[in-house]
Amino acid sequence: MALLDIRNLSIDITTAQGKVRVIDKASLTIVDGTIHGLVGESGSGKSIIAKAILGLHNPSWTVTADRMFLGTTDLSKLSSPDRRKIMGKEIAMIFQHPRSYLDPSRKILSQIKEVLPHSSVRSRFINIVKPKKEQSVMRRINELLHKVGIQNGRSVLDSYPYELSEGVCQKVMIAMAVANSPRLIIADEPTNAMEAVTQAQIFRLLYKLNQLHNTAILLLSNNFGSISDLSDYITLVYCGQTVESGSYKQVMESPMHPYTETMIKTILNFDESIDHKSQLYTLPGNIPSANQLPIGCRLGPRCPRAQRNCVKNPDVVNYKGHIIRCHFPTLDENKHANTSQRK
Ligand code: SF4
Image 1 (spheres, rainbow, N blue to C red):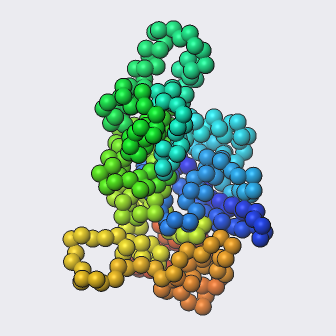
Image 2: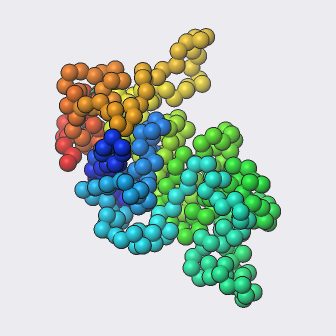
Image 3: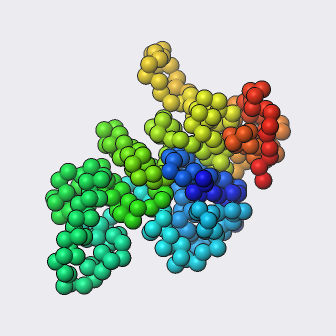
């Protein structure tokens, strides 16, 4: 069952040069209890899509979508306060650079208390706390720290964010994110700039939350290799457009879009030997800036398969649940049958 269903999400941002369409008809379907990887280079629009889901709109944004449902709730029809309630309870967000999202002037204990469900939060505003209630709050906090693998809970709770490593701060952020048992966690490059060991710990932790508590996770990353094996479903986004989407098997074993094929080739395979100083596979050029977008397919100037027809924007086509936006996808005969255009 789809937990989050977004169809044709477009976001226009007003700039000094006029309106710029940074997200163009992006679609995303997250199945309940699964891990969904949203992959694309830096600047491709992943974080903007995440912010649109959470309703963290900048006033200069115009957000439109044909459909934006969380379960049976139409997110596009909710007022800002109602959207905020959903954000705290049903959807939680984990950011990159966790230290910058924690309040540097407050100890971890008071920051975790603040995100606990309402009955526990009151203790922050009332100085006289009943001992029994305080005990149950502390029990809950210790449970959360234990869940995210923080062993020395007492000293972490008694620390300021700058006294902790980036990895521990991220675990604290995850503890805060799961405090309300959300149905969906959006993790925006949660291991960016972390050491390899810490990265592995954070990914293992997210995987455990998914497996043990059936929490759906939307994992944003520019590193295909690091998240592909964790993901049940994968969506690739390029320059504000979702270009290919499907199950892990569909995307990794039978990629159809030139961008996906390139991203897969860029995953390093340490079992294969490569010639000394040989060039690693990459796409030529850089992702264009939002106010200098090419006409037609946005990948056109960098695409190894581009043809004259690509100056027209490609339609989105659904090949038995494997969704693709390209005039010339790689097709095998079995997939060619039974396709439909997705509106
Ligand atoms: S539509 Fe053309 S330019 Fe765009 S990805 Fe497909 S082949 Fe490449």
